[in-house]
Amino acid sequence: MISPSILIVDDSAVIRMTIGEYLRIFGYAIDAAENAEQALSILQSKKIDVVITDIKMNGGMDGLELTGQIKKSYDSDVIVITGHSKDYSYEEAIDRGADDIVFKPFNPEELLLRLKRVLRKRNLTQERDRVLMELKTLAITDSLTGLYNRRHFYHELEIEISRVIRHGHRLSLLLIDIDDFKKYNDRHGHIDGDKVLRKTADLIASCMRKMDSAYRYGGEEFTVILPETDCSSAVKLAQRIRRIIATHFLAVPDRRKITVSIGVTEFNPQDSLSEFVHRADKAMYEAKGSGRNQIACSLRDSDSQSSISAV
Image 1 (cartoon, one colour):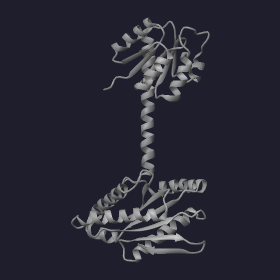
Image 2 (tube, rainbow, N blue to C red):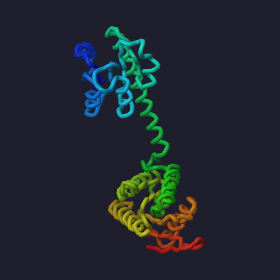
Image 3 (cartoon, rainbow, N blue to C red):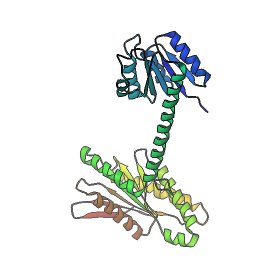
């Protein structure tokens, strides 16, 4: 178990040594600094759980100013100590970002209890944040494939469309469907079908750039958002995805006929979100209608016409 790391900041060497030696007895890892500037240097180089700082110190920055800097830039809690109870209040210290304040004179046992309380609260906060992050991830992730889910797809597509409208970037979309997947499921069962879905998702993700994002659209359908990408470049990526999936499953017994059909389209500033997605869906069905294991690209030539070509 890693010991909590404590940084003691005080311009008195005696106080730094006294507090440090006492807290080491209880297993804490101790660092010390004689002023705020030195403390910030230590915080830049290592992780500190709690900073214990005097308010009045030599140098250009006092303890409350240091507290503000810590809360702005570092993941550390702060306990301030002061012998000037008439000049500083608990409310003021808390308002400046401190997690607790201890007034001098104090005995070491009191400081230890305050430190344990701050660490306990810190651990609870970190655990809460971890759980919330896990819940957020679960809410936007497809549990079977690990890709983002359909709801998150529409959320992200709205954001990308807004960027296109603001900045004039290109934006393309792929809609990918596993050919004859229902027949495969009926023949081999859902457990084996789930393996195919997971592997297909992995293969799709392996072809993407960092700025691209892939989603399980539903059932055996996947979609990929391609920011700053025109239709020609999107077709090249689609062709790569189509080939890598066909090649992979060709080498796997009983799965050699797994292929995908892909619809490709590029956003037009006059599109609504639903029109954009519908055009990709239309292209995907054109690819299926042309024999499967193909790519079809749908581009709007005018407000009322679209051109579709099999690739």
